[in-house]
Image (tube, rainbow, N blue to C red; front, side, top):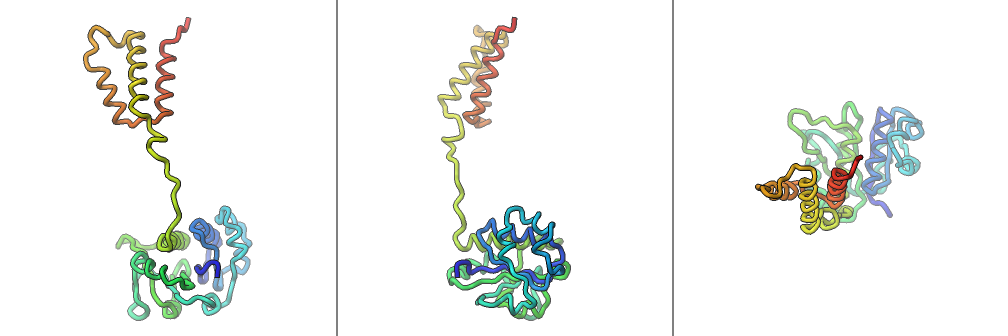
Length: 239
């Protein structure tokens, strides 16, 4: 199985949520989306769905609509329900990050099951699952949009699987070095003298203060070029 992860949405009401969910799983590198009894039989082709998918049309094209959760779970060996609060009876409840790392090491076919927008998962659907995942939220307001919940779980699951690398930019490639800052300050000192702002016979601590300002600002190379350009423009003969 090339993609052992499946996202299952049960009885979704809003086409936009289906499209947004498709986008959410694609950006995390997943593609298997199954809909169980959606409100609209043609939800995968609806304009709102495709608009919210925003480039994840391949996920929509590969998605399936089925009549039951049992069909959606075909081939999956570990099933994760999603719920805001634990049930009195049913599988154990964990925060995603407490459960997913160990699950990632097993290499199983994993399904994440999401309920309808208004009611969440029915108890009988939760009972089919091995575990219930509850996203930690503020205790006074834990209601998440369906697509947002899909995004959060897709992200945590991808991180558990090892994540994606981030193209980092080194500070040395971005910020101006000491020599560039000193060159800027010398340029500005000449400019300030030329426009009559700085008296070279009584400079006081103006240049050291400008040096401290530049250090606090962490000027980039491009910003140094801009400031030196301003200094050049300030001394141009405008006659």
